[in-house]
Image 1 (cartoon, rainbow, N blue to C red):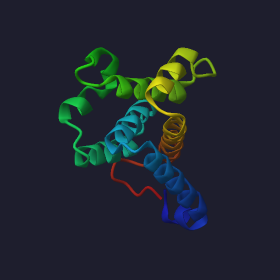
Image 2: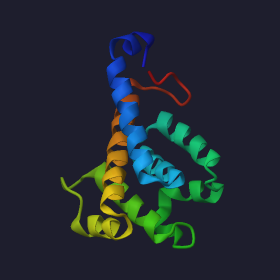
Image 3: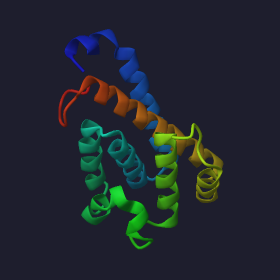
Amino acid sequence: MTARTTRLAPEVRTAMQSLSAAAKRGLGDPALAELVQIRASQLNRCAFCLDMHVAIARKEGVSERRLDLLAVWQEAGDEVYDERERAALALTEAVTVLTDGFVPDEVYETAAKHFDEAELAHLIALITAINGWNRLMVARRIPPGGPAW
């Protein structure tokens, strides 16, 4: 966003940053948090967030192979993404797309098998936060590496 927007909406930026940080802390797995944020950003076509979260994922030790195959995680197999990651990615897609207006019961129940109630709440909050960031950056047409706020 422009410098003018930064001056006019600092409370929005602060609130979004706080939500994202709290959700990530509650999830407890930095690499998984980045995979979730990357996948949502791919679906939302947010180049800014995709660029940023891929860089963070690399710093968290996520392999190039896992990053390269994330767009096709369902076809990549269990040797690339474990069951817990696959459940999180399925939930990410369901919450991000919401084509039928809800998250399918099967997707939610699978995620609930792999995450305790608090982790699941934080995972959903993280997915919600990255979708908000994606919409802000896409709406403002912020390019990769550009000024976020």
